Image (cartoon, rainbow, N blue to C red):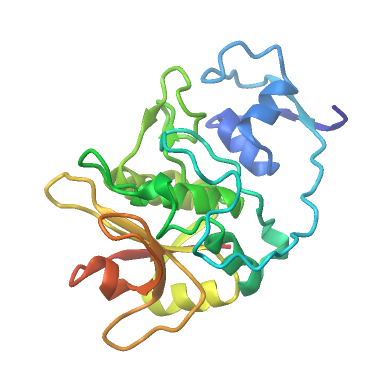
Amino acid sequence: MPITATYEIKPGDTLAKVAAKYKLTLSTLLAANPQITNPNVVVVGQLLVIPSRVPDPAPTLTNYDGLTPAPGTIEINAAKLIHPPLTNEEAARTATVYTEVIDQFAVGKNPRYRPRDGNTYCNIFLWDVTRAMHCEIPHWVNAQGNPAEPFQAGASEMNVNGTLTWLTNQGTRHFGWKPTDAADAQRCANEGHPAVALWRNPTGGHGHTAVVRPGALLAGRGAAIAQAGRLCFNLGHIKDGFGNLTPKFYVHG
């Protein structure tokens, strides 16, 4: 694995933060640093090897129709990662690519997101889309609140309420997310930048979230969205998914 640079751990650093800084996955950074036996413990002054990262090739668009899940997107165990065929680098974002990334999951038809056993999976869809857009809003976090691999020792799963807390803290401070309003979220989505809507359940329940997708901000219906949840649909609006609730919006980049 070719070395790009070395990095000296500074106060407040975590491996997840360093990986994000160099646009690496945590597993890639760990593979380049086999001396690390506990990924949750780093020491100020410790040197890390930063491997070179091969950029993703330019995405090949295949006109996903939003009705048929793409290969690699169906995994009924929602806690596990999936590996969609289409991903998108931040430097190559366009509305067309963002639309294709969302449509490949076919959220209205994909059994991964279908409500079952009393559970809904809006946050899993959020996780899948943002991972594919290389701006992961994690489902799993470690004890420090940083993104973790599924089932990693010491890691826990977040519901939507936890995700909103994560966005307020780690997401906005270290991972490129910022709060905004509905109009700006729609504008950003129409330029190919990931945008999301989230509502915190004040009673401590699961909350709700959706992905803002390219489309129109309609009076009385709000921004265009795709969502999983009690209702799963690939193309609707805020009113269809949140009813009279007022979500918070975040955009990336």
